[in-house]
Length: 142
Length: 453
Image (cartoon, rainbow over all chains, first blue to last red; front, side, top):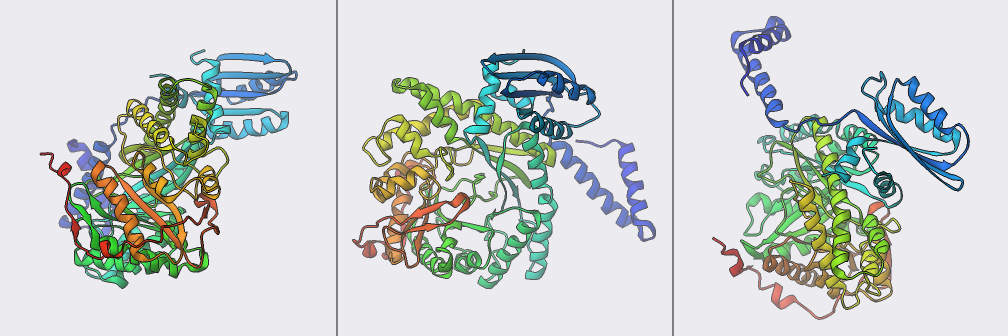
């Protein structure tokens, strides 16, 4: 990994600023060399491509009653989540519902959504699980 | 819908009811640049380096845990075998280093740090000898430090002097931690053919050919396999092997995803997935229960070794397909104290030490968390370790002994360790002596199998 001249200049300026009055040419040189080493270490080691999709899967099940999906989707719309797919099954008095949700445009992160949904699930006395789509893709698709 | 209903529910069932978890995410850190002639400077360097790389280890793992909804049971750290960079030090210095490791582990919020290790299969350096002598002090005066010593390998043969020394160390450690059921011995593993990238503590260390830092992952899911076998019902063995492979494939994929994600957060390389079935004392999370579900009446019945061999092999085959970076021990673990079904088999008198030894021929790792009477002579322990090493050397596989001669306990007693270490019934050891054999000392030469070039 080679750094461009601009990048090296930027590192040098940062080093001079950091060292302040103590800056001597030798000291600056050694600090810059160290930063270059760090930068190239970070760049060379990370080859894992980020293929995650920004989609999450919400699974909910429990005793069926009216308004469950309404309440869940209302909450999701507050988070500006985009529901991409929804499917449900009802067996006697139990329901299972699975949603594929895109959270790319949501101002909230996954953790906040999980937290809110946890409270909602407790309120409605049902189960809600939220997991990143990748885990299903890794386990069930080659 | 991009996924089938059943697929999603299967994943949720695995994580919620079948105890599927990532057993450990282990951060390997090289300490080779921490050496200094002054012990105080060395300690400072070690401490700072572990904190520098490890300070976010637990936090990152927890974030990934929430993201994928798969729990990560243990977050741990493995370091370079301490004897290698710090060869210049003496016994008391090594105890000081162990205390530094302990303090660093506490600081970053992990329960175990491993790598207080030495590789002496062919002989000792001065530092290695000093480190081994320091083990009883180091492990009894710290809480989180784990130690492993490799005493044999297929290439080098079996170092009987090292085995004799280790059995004295085990006895001494048992005595020093007698108030807590000799728990010190649960943190010490004697190895043959030790893998360099094993993420499972107590036997983990950061191998000498590893990079500066690395993330290794150990997966586990006996409960998942157990339910799959039960669901398959009465099918023939080919079909059963297929059932096991399918389920292991899925959990290995999840393991690789978690490992890569944690490594990415740390901004450091991802090493390996160790595809092991590691039991816990939790109900249903047991290798013994799998063997029973496969058809033997209890662990120890004739057929147990064959069932275990098939299970172990299926695990490996599926794991190899699922991940490009399989490593570590990769196989089924058969610890006694950590597996409810194994404990019961011992208590019912169905599982003996000898049958357990036979089972270690076909799985990883070896005699693990086996409690024996406190008055077992050191030479008998040496004989047991030598037998395990012989299995490892001849079969070119890792074997290990984590044996606890529990101070003051007899056959029929039980020691409670709590947590993942579980509870250990004291197993019967044969009274006939190995003394004249093991005390010959020296080295059992490497077998013809070592000449592969």
